[in-house]
Length: 304
Image (tube, rainbow, N blue to C red):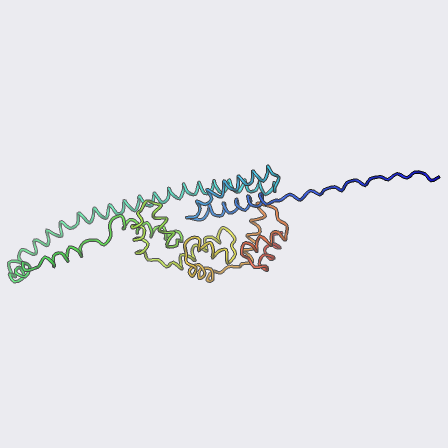
């Protein structure tokens, strides 16, 4: 008689937990980085007021849902920094512009006072010289009497200034802005309107200021590259976002002396300062930013 056999049930298969997604953490971190970058750029810096809080909120959600905790913390930090930087920058920039505007208005008032006070002696001197001339030349007096109303109206029109005081001040402010920073045409109009000038005054100033918009695009491009890494296409898109035409943006980038491999390395280093990336993930991020595959691989290998 054979011994009874016992069948042992197989243990149930263990379900594998799906790997946690880091999407929220990465979104928070990228939003924070963009908020910091934009906070240094004139005109569009106000976007950091939006992106900064978004990065903080996404970072908190990422931590609570354990969806990329490290990236979430980085997003909170960078978002808060971007918000603080743009707030301080806005305060300082507004104070500087108000100071410049007050100086320009004071200068205009002093010029106006001098202009109003100077004609009196000239008129008296002209009257003294004209008295004997009228006695000696009666023919000229007769010709003066025959002048028509149209002649007088034409002289008054010629003596009338072509622009109002508001337009003149707007023109002076536009020249002041262009002396220390690059602006696109639409960006300069928006800046003048932000300072309180009417749309008509701002447009008059921009139409009458002596400026080469291609040169302004080159100045803005150099300014961006001085504090952040950009790919070629990314820099063109940034200039177009600032209001430059596609032609001016492309000409500016083409005429720059820039090493795109070096820019890729700068961007890669910036990403690693605020988050964790694998080598391939870092390369993919650089390609997404507009770098070529070769530039992305070079930049990632320089810092990884």
